[in-house]
Length: 237
Image (cartoon, rainbow, N blue to C red; front, top):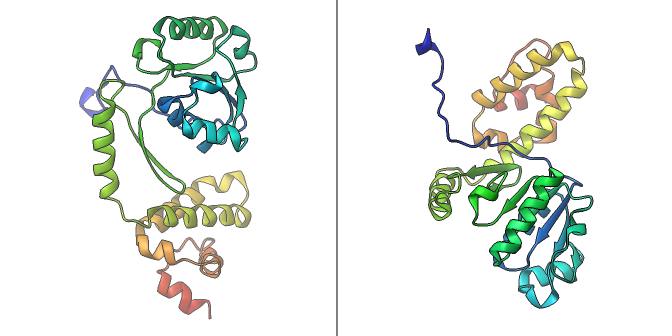
């Protein structure tokens, strides 16, 4: 029986897409590492508060403060800065202060990442490739961040340049399909039909698909057919 199932490979991380839209992320520090953490959080639509003296802000972080992209607490970290925090990202050069932040987060059960201290992290940051809605993260579980970057670049170089645009069109088609077949019992059929579209159409077809093409394609959903893009356009005239 055992050969039928995947083997358990312990020692990994549970890689998930953490939804932080409108969540409060507190970043302790204002240097280069903090700047990267801030950008990740802003890209995920989080509400970001940076706790760091003005003199400790690098050019990028100072820019985000000046543009009101983040809130700024102009002093060193204090325990009350954790009030209302949903996540804490600590990136300072003081090991003792970093450990104190970690301990306070544990007491309050706030997920935290202490930069460059794997034992004091609830989660790790990986090397991320972004193309519109497409995000690919490579993680080494804290063992080799630079190697993660190298692997990520290799993966990204194998992808067609228009992958993100194709995904955006597929997302629009899925939303339209839910209006055509909104009932819950249609779920399995919707998933199978969309899978067939993605498997049978080329990436180039998905990129070229217009709103008119989508509407025409959806007319084939009820009979459960997936014609080619050419057939869709010929049939839509």
